[in-house]
Amino acid sequence: MTARRELTTAVLGAVVAGVLALVAGGQAWAESTIERRPPLPPVVETLSGSDAAPLVPAAGLVLLAAGLALLAVRAAGRVVVGLLVAVAGGVLAWSGGRALGDGLETAAGEAVEVSAGWPVLALLAGALGAAVGLLVVVRGRSWPGMGRRYERGPGPEAPRRPRSDEERAQDAWKALDRGEDPTA
Image (cartoon, rainbow, N blue to C red):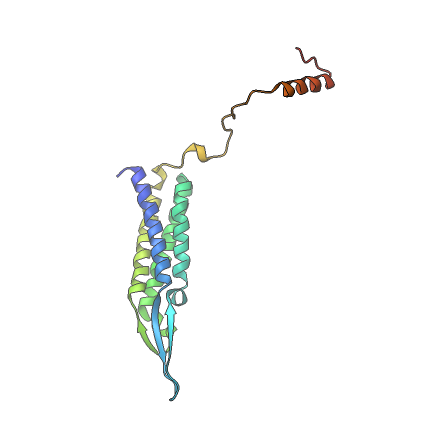
């Protein structure tokens, strides 16, 4: 695989992991039903992914930003971003796995119906993010960076337009005011 393809794979992997985390974090992970005395109906509360595991959407945002940062940085900076992606992926996987355990039942309340699909998606997105981060750390130094045209520095001179007769006359008068000979 070429270096450019590896870079593209890493960027897309980080972005996909981030989007999956944000999608999973916005869905309902558990529903709890609280029974009340008759004639009051039971209360049904929905626990979203961002309520059950607040680190899921946060890690998703970090993965999205880091995926785009991979394009802008080079060499050592790319390794730092790779470490950040690996840590964010690990945190995301940990949050999804924790929610699969006893995390949702203790957070939601009494009678709990847990939807395991969204925490599993968060766990898989975290595993993808961690794998992408490790790929960047191991191979990222050799990947190409953005072109030099995006860096700040002395650019090419802008083409000059021809000066009008009036501008040349004003320049001559200014030279006379400074004590210079405009014909020299």
